[in-house]
Length: 326
Image (cartoon, helix red, strand yellow):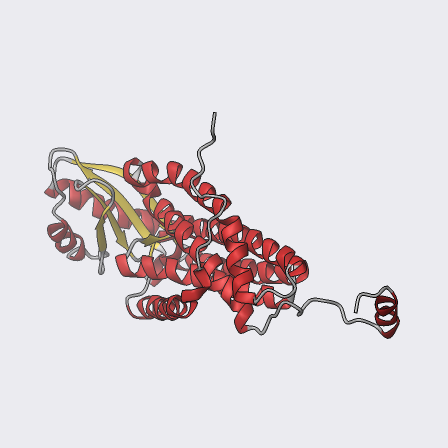
């Protein structure tokens, strides 16, 4: 039986021919992503923002009255400026309130706040069900944020060093830029749609870094092989050849992951939506960056077909001439 091939063996797509338009678009997307992060900010979950998070469900109401809940909780003594968002179904909401300074190191105060809010909610709506309560102090949430940033930066630097050692420093710079592109666009999506940014999302971004690294190394490994085989081939053509030769593997890997991610994205639990959305986006941007970020960077870094050929010594040159090799 003939095997199904999603990518024909003779595929010859000129990816690098349009590298400049895609590179410009990518730079604009990176700038827009960081602009959104700086202006709109990230919608930190309790892990990073600190405070109390109360998840409730209206068992007899089709849609939660978010405006009314915001007014109700805000009018309480310790309600402050609550953040109330739908959490899954229209009748499910997440209520987040910041803990005041006097609550630091005082679990009794946090419990009192929770009782005050839940009692007010139950008094106003008899069909409310409390699904869960989480509490994180401001100090702990700050430590979480610092540790998360450190983990992301350390992962990206470690990846760059690994590629540098495995290949050459130009490859390390290209790989690092591709990872920066992927992480930036993921953060931009969370800032744009104000999806909750929690420790789960840090795990998702680390998974994106791993996937993107894997895809980039496969392409780089083929480029290195072809640099040895085709010494006289222009670099853009050699890069296109390498990307086309690894395209079948890239497509099959991406489709396999999508088979698992798409059902989870649309039919999975609301608590995993942000994680799944981040990995799904990372699947696309990671593949894209391996082709249009990591590969073209080698051209812009001055790599040529002879860049990594060892310099010939006088003795080696004399031996080559003696063998009649010119």
